Image 1 (cartoon, rainbow, N blue to C red):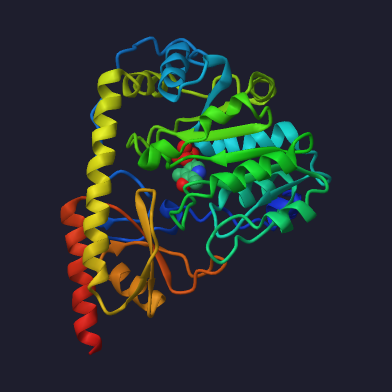
Image 2 (cartoon, rainbow, N blue to C red):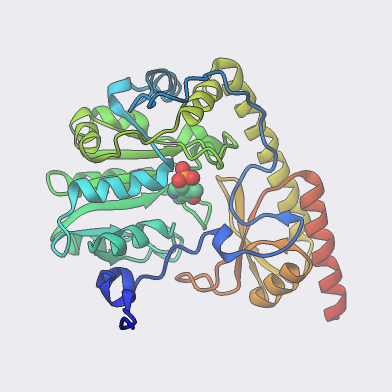
Length: 360
Ligand SMILES: *Cc1c(COP(=O)(O)O)cnc(C)c1O
């Protein structure tokens, strides 16, 4: 008889203590209306063009780089393509932060992966809450720059939906110069494309911009994201990225998604989604249970209800799956709602109206 071995005690301490990222898919749920992951509600259709599956893929698929560079208004050498923007968040930490020594900063309420990646890698972090109007608390950030290598900010911010004030981002870049990189997560920028700060790369060697095909391009299932930065940063990331980060079918479909024709289709989808968002906001504004709808530059809205957790749970049981935000800093009673099809949004409003009636 061998002794039972406690494998868990072999796991790294920080991993043993880690709460994994609570992705929409991990949380689960059962239903027909999924408005919890900021996905585009309809899938585009693509067919594979490449058939050379016996070969390893290109480490950085040239056509994808060239087309994305063209789309983003940068040079291919200012890009690295990865397994979603999520991989890029972690690559930056692996390339720039010494575990147990260096820190990152992020500003809650915000996207959860900055924290989870830091905890996974044993990198220190400073969570510096945003101001009450959900902008950067620059004085507090300035006081906390010691040992900080990366400052992650998100604009439009997930889950609040608002853009960060560009003057604040500029001030942050100035205060971080020669100390830390400023990473601006633009996962939702297509919904507010005139607000991208990609043109600032010429002036700020320590600016990094994250992008993805998961949101406006409707390709969350593809797992394809981009880091835009000046060449010295890209070179550092290329050293540590996996040898073949993008599978051949992923590169194939990403290249197709970036043709001029498909870019125009994507932009049309954005216009329609923004219209649907406006319509949903107007419908929700008529409901008594809704306390506040926050302005949104993204493909979701953050809504504060009178009793958010009850609303969330009741809709969940009806098969309408939203994203509860009440545990996030400052977001009691708030639910994030991804914009779905007209039918999905109408079903949501209808379900809310029936809850409303029961309460009275
Ligand atoms: C969805 C999202 C990502 C992740 O994008 P992937 O390319 O799907 O990994 C990154 N940042 C923010 C703010 C997001 O909402």
